[in-house]
Image (cartoon, one colour):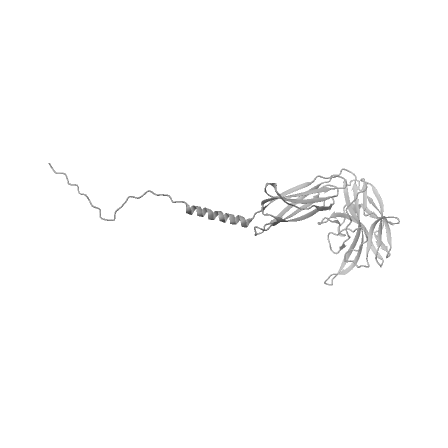
Length: 346
């Protein structure tokens, strides 16, 4: 069984970069290379490149696969190239990457044996090199990825005049699926939301949503994602268009950022991220994760509280006072004493 995969990416030059990008099968010159040094690495048969985009295989544990690779010199001078295999991984931005030369492989890169580890290719010519892959008997089911690399080491000069060794690499991808149970799965690992409410109550606010996706299954996964923002009573305020989720190798992680503008300060906002993963074989259910954030119109709130305080003060001032009982009357003049005659003795 053959599978269709995403378009190839351009090969990147390596100058101390820890996460190099694998090359496309189309002829290309690594970034920053001398225009006279250009080469390509492509799937081949005994006569030359076959037009295959990648090396794509279905295999069983313990199986041996024999194939050939063509290295084409598109430059004007002879090229001496080092050939080797390595493992693939998903870069931070969701691209297909290959391990740096300093990091030994543990997967497909160790399964590959190339007939020559160094070739000299005349200008305008190609060299076909046989290789084989031996799948370990205990290989886990699912997708495994790597690359066959042709590299050339040159000496370059930095902007400040220092001489450095530059390892330029071009590669052909290897996709290999080992027979066994397939468990496609995608997880929204984290969801972070930041809201900005302007001081002007008549302006609209923004929300930035960042979510991280992880392929927790054993097959490659791509898909689409979108974000919805709802206010009180589940009133939908905004919804983004769908964005493509880059292809993630098993265990691969990528982060997506969406910025939504024109939102009213409606108080409590509910953010829902919907991701619909897909493989070439099995449709998957949509994965959803939600998060709540407050978008409070602080200026209006403060003005409302101030108006309420002023209204309460006015009401209190208009309320009639409590009537107290009158005190006994007194006079300021001398008090006249009335004499009572004493009783007479009989």
